[in-house]
Image 1 (cartoon, rainbow, N blue to C red):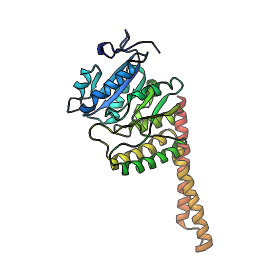
Image 2: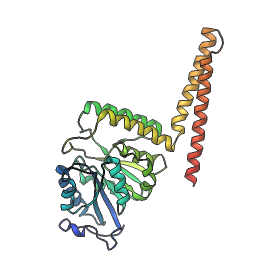
Image 3: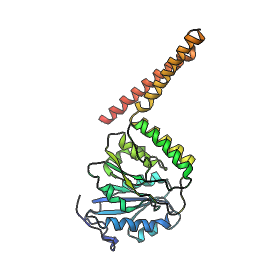
Length: 308
């Protein structure tokens, strides 16, 4: 990385580079109506990054806030990109990745729940890893009784489909190389499940992904997470992402399950009912074969795309 330095008391020289597009690290802060939290978060980030040798920028993407979020960030020297229309957490993150000037991007929520002091832990894992995620010690969000079991269940499904252990699926603190992330933005949704998509896109495409333990604090202000609707979207995102990049992980088990069911039902037809194979048994077995063939075809298409 290019040596540089950003002084905490001179925001105008935050990017220590003659080329304003060539910084080492972008700290990306997506925000919507976070006026109360944005000041403490930016100060924490700057205190941490100012002590490092790399050049950096703090980029806040304002998702059409109706409060003073953008003005507060600009007053503290952050570069602000304003979205004209509110698009959601994922839309802000995608805008930020496209607008980022750093080869590495550190992305964190702007609600004060993550500790900027953990950023060096993530950066220490590069260049060996392509994406490094914060593994939160505990759940601090509202409606904990609903969030914890729902997230555990979705994470277990993701582990089963992705074929790898995932300590924290939807962490909002992550660092990644910008170039590969640009290739996967097309699959990242605009809502809360965006961070899940970013993780699974890297994992299912052979990118090196790891986790490091980080602190997690109660957020500043009111949570915007809606457990039932957003939980359903998380689950749909997991299945969709694995289907995009590893379709046999979805269609294979489903097809085998249908075939196993048809075999069990066939045995029941012949040994218990004793009237020969039922039409439903044949339909079940044919359905299983079709699902398997569909999975194989999808897997061939994905493999061909990766070669292009």
